[in-house]
Length: 472
Image 1 (tube, helix red, strand yellow):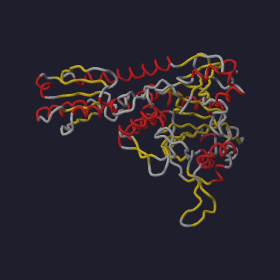
Image 2 (image 1 turned 90 degrees about the vertical axis):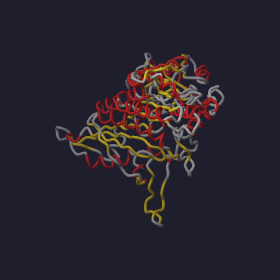
Image 3 (image 1 turned 60 degrees about the horizontal axis):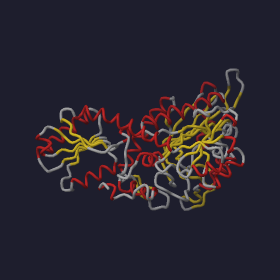
Image 4 (image 1 turned 45 degrees about the vertical axis):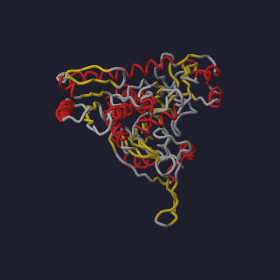
């Protein structure tokens, strides 16, 4: 057992406890004073900021613009769309008093912003020239959580939520799927190194108020599924109650067609569970707050000077680098700290290394150490970071494939879901089949075509498969 493993609960013994250990010891987050809330610590927030930047860049590439809408929403707004309010009612936080007085109308603390955004869209959209309208918001939301778990399910969390309006159903459909693939799927594979499945939710699992929900589903280290992002087609379900109309090119009035979509700080939880091992985090380099740590072995002025020179060169090459010169803390303790925090690359340097013109290079995603010339360190590490990303993605993909089982019946799907995903004909979960799965603690994560691709809305159920799993 390595020193890092000694301070964490082994995953095989108790995966939820291991997860809690990593969140605490990597200094990612801690519980807030109100049950279900969390304090995101600087290291955890730095990961979120990097994720946020990657998502934001892709969202803007679609043509969306960032805006901000109020945290407080009139209760009457939610009641305009019956399915929406019914779906969110159990999770709502409602303010009834303010300024020492009872409010004339209660206000809801934002659980999602479809209603308040659409109240604005009704004012902003008049003509076909105003369309398409693509708005994104970075915000916090509140959903009263009964079984909280840091990052995965909290009463308050951070996210982005996109809201769009289009002239036609076809345009809204295309945008919803582009968001799923060009924003979410691409970020998860090329940045998070997580090989998610994409598909359509069943009617029982789709977003309250949507006509169609598209999803990204990741397999975690214990074989359970995590819904990592969703993109919804709303049809005209909000346009009609909020009277969002536009005059088309002929001058006729028509209701808009809409989408909404979001991803949250839950992604940080997915990152931990998809890649972590018994030594702690294993961060994909593109999301690591510290990509390279230069670890000074001894309090030697010449060694410290070389460590700082090396760190400066790495930083100049665009790598996020930190010198750990805490020589008052044991070398072994510092190694454990950085392994738990998942820094992708460690360069260790002491007096003997300096005399030989080298450092010791350690990859977090692999066992073993190797010497690297100080002159070649920057180029070697730069190339290695790309290799680490590819290695983590490949490992996660192998695990997903190994733990995905093709079955024919609901009973077999329940059994297979004890340690992974099960794939069975979608016809088997139609009607009562999904209810039987839910009774056994298993849910339909998504529907796909038989080749694993996204279905079209009109595909018959006989041509689809259902991916089912136990889920967070």
